[in-house]
Length: 310
Image (cartoon, rainbow, N blue to C red; front, side, top):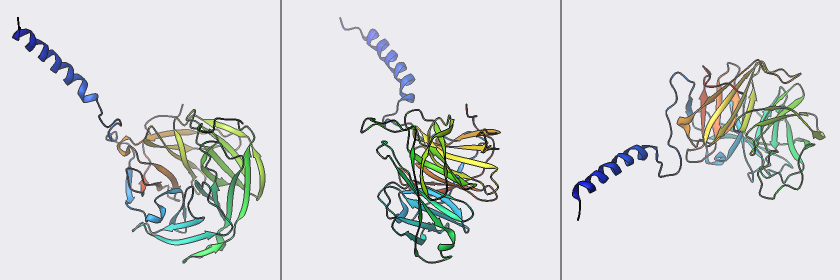
């Protein structure tokens, strides 16, 4: 016999189960943006839309009171300066004789700008290239064509015979320059750590070995050092959530650090952070390429950290 009471009891039980389970479900397959925890630093939009010429921007420096960027793999070998108000490119510096195989980062010291053609997602490149441009060759305004010296390097510890489509720990998208050296941070797809390599900033060909490993817990995509060398910043993302590491008291002899702070930005889910630049007053700019978010520039004012590096 058909039991109405039994069916009603089952229906109520099913409803209770669904009410418990559905709030945690995500039909789209990706977590939604989450609000930032209270009293934590936030990425604040500065330039909402970058010029369509630099939608694939990768690398960022602050020079002559302007931001400069490049496009990544397949782009023209050009260094662009950006109007911070409009996002338009206001200067294009063409690098003579250069080839953009996978440009990923910009670095600078007092006299030079370094363009790092060091992208190596699948570990297929045995030799990486850095273009060294004299700042004096770049006009204050207007476009130009300039020459560059070349630095080449290879990783001495690089594993051979990796699978052709295997993500590589020898991808580098983050670097800064200091004391006639380049400091290169890898983007490790396997362990989500970053290995630090140092390379002479003089033209030549070098074999590099890691000098330190940091447990970044994510993919590091950009780096910069403050003008007074007291602050190093790393930017990247983990599982589509962008983050920064704030590093104070970086010791260039033994690569130890006085303090480290990590800040995650769950409210900016799927923001593909690519570059970071520090002004003298520690105003920090973070750039992102086009994804589900437009290609933009954000500012970050540092404050309390969320969690410490292990």
